[in-house]
Image (cartoon, rainbow, N blue to C red; front, top):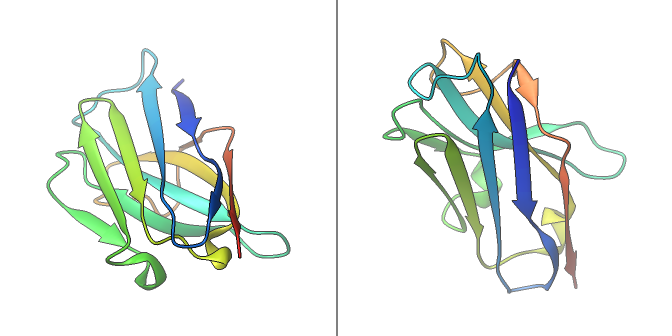
Amino acid sequence: QVHLAESGGGLAQAGGSLSLSCTASGPNFHPDAYAMGWFRQAPGKVRESVASTSSSGILSDYKDAVQGRFTISKTQNTIYLQMNSLKFEDTAVYYCVVQSGVRRPVSPNYWGRGTQVTVSP
C-alpha cells in the first residue's frame, strides 16, 4: 500500500501562481521504483496527465497546455508542482499519482485524494 498526501492548491487569479506538493509513504513505496506525477480533472472532463517525473527525478514530461508554465520537481519521496501564469482553464481537482516500472505514470497504481485548484478569470 502507498499513501499519497497532497497539500497546496486553493484559489488564484488568472496570471497568478500556486504550488502543490505530494509526499508518498508506505511499506510498498520505494522512491527509486516509482514514477510520480500529477493528473487533473476539470468539471465535465476526463482526467488527464499534467506533469510527471521519472523515479530518478531527472526526466520530466508535461502536457502541452502547461509547458513553460508548470514545473515539477522531486526530492526522495516528495514531488512539487509550481504553477505559474495560471489560466482559468487550469481550474480542476489535481491528483498526485505514482506508478511503478515506468518512466511516467500512465495508468497509476495509486492516487491521492485530490486537491482543488481554482483560477478566477
